[in-house]
Length: 153
Image 1 (cartoon, helix red, strand yellow):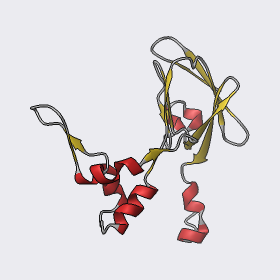
Image 2: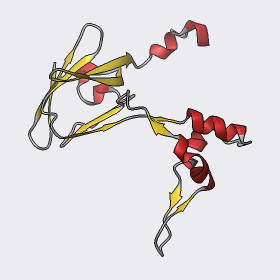
Image 3: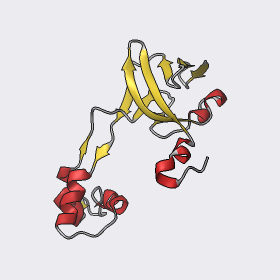
Image 4: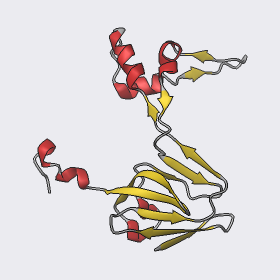
């Protein structure tokens, strides 16, 4: 079990379960949550329209807006055409930030919060009766996938 006290002196408790998930309890009245963006429909339409950007570059371009000194804003061509096809998957929480901290997000190493959680990476969050359950995966689990890379471990 690990405890975290944020800048407002709120105390949060993190307890490791047998399945490597972590129960996170504490005052959660004021917090921000994030949901992952889904780019599939937007990127598929972009490619059908002849676009050649890699998906990672497309993700940046579809959100690109510039703000000239004289005011207003200018959307990129890709933003104007495809941004409305991007949406947030509100069935998955990928970030939680209680007021005062701690800020936790998908793929974060929980070892940053407490040494006993080193190597446990956040895969998601699920609401529980008294807080959240943080689902995790091992930092090097991907190296054990013999079907893909021949099993490095």
